[in-house]
Length: 228
Image (cartoon, rainbow, N blue to C red):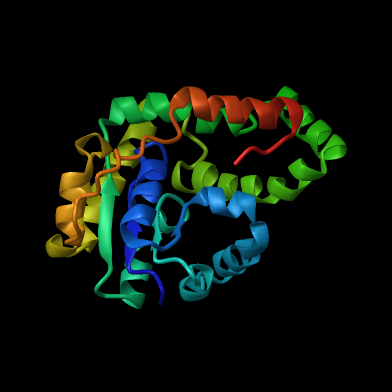
């Protein structure tokens, strides 16, 4: 398997910043769920694997030296089974901060009633680009919002408990010597020490800030246009 580094942190814990940091440090592309939106060509592998309960992760991540965010963050034991030497970087933040960030960004794109559903139908009619990425959103809805969060993300305490359980699960399944617990605010030093690489002179990436993310989300929801 090409993958030798994986991020186990959930969305809105600095996963995009980590993606860019790993690409700079390793010189190899890093897979983030945004790549699936850019090119949904690998989506059938996920759907087939979901149906069978056995995704071909080596094929899905072919050509990528690292992966962060969804879907990989939910399948750490499976990825470790394919590469027992896998280095795992868990991006984290306080559960309350994480919940507020997700609620005000990613979760905005989840249909919550007839108005949202009508808007999605309208975008599908008028925008070829929206039709291209819509299956990815539908799969993410099944995997994340209906799967991981059991359709109850709006329940703040329940969602934060899911977040805490995920963190406990990562500590349980990853050997301590292969795991870095990482706050992106700490910058290069802990990450480079863990990966045993020199600290770059470039500033640590700060990507996908809330305003930036929501501007892209508005473009998608209101105009049916996907901006990477």
